[in-house]
Image 1 (cartoon, one colour):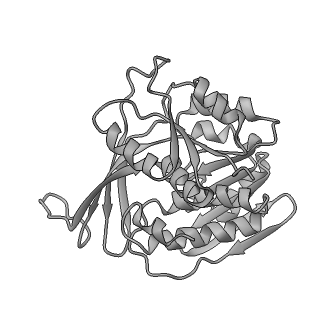
Image 2 (cartoon, rainbow, N blue to C red):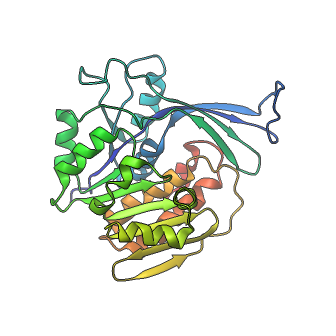
Length: 294
């Protein structure tokens, strides 16, 4: 049997992760406990998680050929992610593209602070390799970055039966215009705050905009989910968090993989994705936690 084919379209960064022994203090030099370089970004991290669950995943993104790109490529490919790099060719915006870099500070209780550039103003377009990957996709997840390419992807897969998932970790203007196309909008308390409402209000906003279903997470607090026919909530396992960096991305990747594995059953997929995200936060480091994923 052929494995489900999941395609993730969006942001990849180089994450420079600094682990500290306490909250950073302004205006001084501070020695860190450890440093890690890895690929990051919502779509990239979600693709890594999905690849761990499905065997492989495809990431349509922009990396380019500058020095930091090698570290990112090596990390992603080592974890089963096939990369389609929209910045590798000569299309609009490719020559000027520079791989975004995120500075990530992780405190002992797992709290993470991230300073990052984005790809919300990217003008990169789909290339032939991306179109071919989308043609064979069973599910596509968008994270709101590289909006021109994402809009082209929506146009290609609309009405094909492909499952469409939106990572709505925060409010992004372009992504708000896509809601009526989306099967599952996976948002968060940050997304709700950006809308000026709470989790229930965010669910209502998404469904009123035409999405088929919504899932809203809030860290260790209950996750709300609702479709046009049913609704529910799931309380995450109460675990000791040591590293929350990328936990939401792991949730989104696991949600996509679980929807494919569970035949689109939203309740089961949400429960499985929550377990995966809870596992992620219990282990320090970008990838070591994957060894514990079953």
